Image (cartoon, rainbow over all chains, first blue to last red; front, top):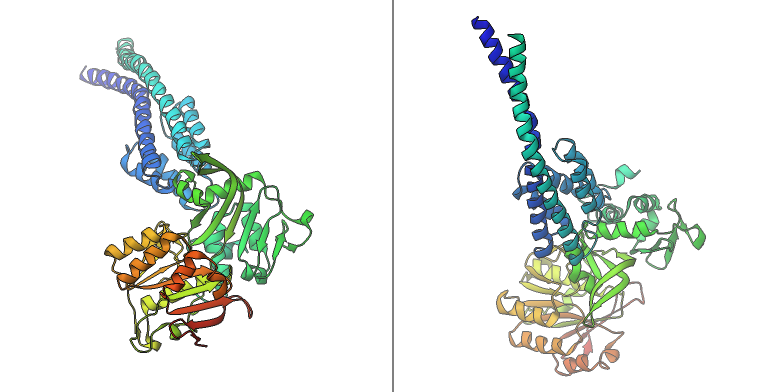
Length: 173
Length: 340
């Protein structure tokens, strides 16, 4: 009897955890997008007001932004510092590929970052400002969308995990 | 071959064979890979002579050598036939511009206005293309279609021959000196080496090093990259990089306390006023002027005025009668006679 109860609790716990993990992924995306937006804002300051050369600017941003997204900026800086004939666009592209592999970003989010990289560092200040603005507004939209999705899906998965566990216990009991 | 060649950041020895090393350390990193490979394949004697690398969109790659220039083939050979030359593509240009600016064109607006960017190592890259104006003034250069990478050489000891004449035998002080030279005769190289030696001190002449202020309007003397001199300009040298001469001289006089002020190519009205200011502050002046000789100098109003004021104690006249940087004459202006 005692063993049965312990087993039921464990099953319920495992299923609930599963539900919370899935919900966690949905909640991670808006958080990462917000951090990315903040990172790009820092980059904007470095480029527009500091006129800092890109490798340094990227390093500065990596130091000051949320650790969740800092690898994107530090990776770009590292690629540029190698001086292997890589342009900023290519360095950014590589960093985005590496970063997306272990992030919660959707394909669409990655597309925003990629498109932003094309003109990175290749034009004058005014033009950089425009591209930063576009990327920032797109990220803002993506954040809103991701938040809505998170709200809806996170609750669903949390309930689903818990109730699924409960169902399993009832069937097996 | 490429492995032994391109090591960015490597320290180079300071003698003859260092030319190849300098190119691989400073110049190759700013070239796109295609062109890097071509330059690496160039024969050694050509590499040692390179003074400039010219990239023009849609035109063959050209290297400027000491005497003439040469077209370069895709295999890194020198040719005179335009059809055999490697044609610089639109991609090559864009890539080079990005590499030169470390992918930060936005950070080089001032430099673009002046028509050149200084890269690591103090080499200057000249820029041409479509100029964008704003209220009648150059705002930036768009569609960059021509680049000239000028390799700056340092000739340590270039000033050895002239220095004994520039130090007053009685007071032991440095004399007000004007270097007169036609373009490309080693004027800046000589100026830089004089600065280096008087700033560090010259034991051979019992000259103790003294503070030198350099106003480097075109980043030619010290070749600053991010404000740090890339050339050896001595121990006691302060450099104002990219600063207009007249203003720069005043800035240095105010608080940097130089004993000698060095600057390149005077000739404007305000330069004369700043020179007089420096003189009144008891500071020695070392500067240069474009011209073939004393007569040509006195045809330019500002320079004539300066000469008439009797500011300068020594005139060094450069030429290329026996190769670049030949010292044609050194004149003691007070006595009005040649010292050679």
